[in-house]
Image (cartoon, rainbow, N blue to C red; front, side, top):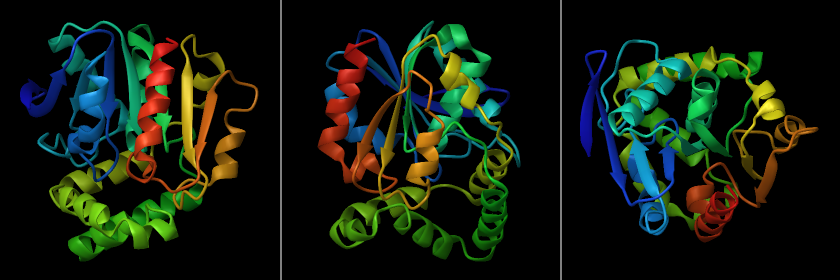
Amino acid sequence: MKTLLYKNTKIAYAETGKGTTVVLLHGFLENSTMWNFYIEELSKKYRVVTIDQLGHGQTECMGYLHTMEDMADTVHAVLNELRIRKAIFVGHSMGGYVALAFAELYPDNVKGIVLLNSTSRADSEERKLNRDRAIKAVKQSYTTFISMSIANLFSEENREVLTEEIEQVKLEALKTPLQGIVAALEGMKIRKDREVLLHFAPYPVLLILGKKDPVLNYQDNLEQIEGTATKLVTFPDGHMSHIENKDQLGKVLLDFFKGI
């Protein structure tokens, strides 16, 4: 991975391939390695950029609160560095929040957005309380928090079936420093509702949901796309479609990119 300095903070990113740019944005407790399986295929036709978000992977922490706008600004800094004007953004979970924050701040740089197991809506009051509980829990026992958090992202059946994959995700998550975890939780908790973007986006938007996602209620998430041109793809599993529905997801992404 290459790095650039943005506001005295080291930002890690990588690029591969040629063509229309696709920016892959990982979620909370993840890093760019989550995309490894997809990069090989996508980079045959596209210029693929992966970025470690603030306080995740090889990117340093910028402070004790990382807002979605802060993360979007770092993405913009990377694209400037690479002289990329327009891109398609794929954001998993928190990465989707960052993609939407980016779209609000830099609308002219967006060619399309894929919200993967993500939502345009702000945290409910209950979710905000859960973020506070999570901050307390991770400060009390870092490893227990990570272990529990990761397992809870998969559908119940897949917790039995995908034990090796889940262990791998945990190992990557354990590379996330405590400060990075807390700063992201604080940032997600206060993020804006950006549902309006789905109604007025001049570019195509694709929402990919898991029917049994333990984190995002499936029915609630359908509501946000009513009356919009947002395309919907539903998988039968949990919050980790890039692992639980590996082969299908690659095809869905390529089909969507082709239409842009």
